[in-house]
Image 1 (cartoon, rainbow, N blue to C red):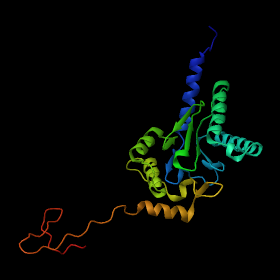
Image 2 (image 1 turned 30 degrees about the vertical axis):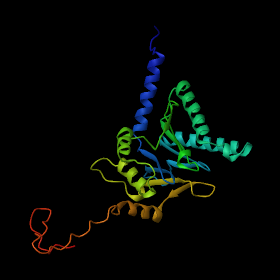
Image 3 (image 1 turned 60 degrees about the vertical axis):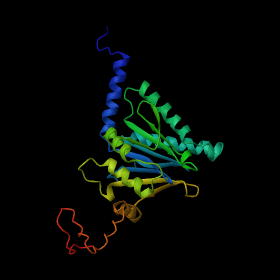
Image 4 (image 1 turned 90 degrees about the horizontal axis):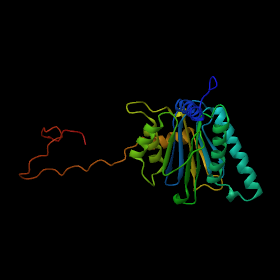
Length: 262
């Protein structure tokens, strides 16, 4: 046996472990459906380097891992979309086609290169209705997962996905979907990232032509204010006691003498 020999299986395991560790160091990204499209949310302290971007009219892109590596994938996807949209028709550019392109490139690099890419990617496409929405999650080795409803990647992805699964429901409003995403991204007992460190965007099916829209500044703050508003109206006041009816009791068991604020 030659000195320093390693089996192909061991080499693949080492490359996979290396990629997983690099991806886990990144901050988690959440992608989920809401009633009017698809929402992207990512904690991101950088204002110059985006983790969420537009690829084409109806297609969005989100990634975690090494920025220079997933930026190359993003630019390659834009070139693919532009060439196919110009050569054939804009409707021929689909999220599935882009996901297949990324899967081929990621799988080839993982197999042939010494180092695999430390990236995980989501390609999302918004349809004319929610049944036409698609979310594809791609891992460093080219595996493709057709996600339904939501996807989480990077950081503590399993824990984030678990919290998403507990709270996600179909046909949520945008404010409710943002609340679910932020709750999933926040560890129990932890603090949510400040507005200045949030990257939020949507694919809104109701927009004309280009569906991608970044939510920033006052628009994002108004949306966050809706998430913190009370979701249930106060209970109606109890009728005043009359006759021999005993007065109502307060929650702690003491008799309510009517002096408590309404």
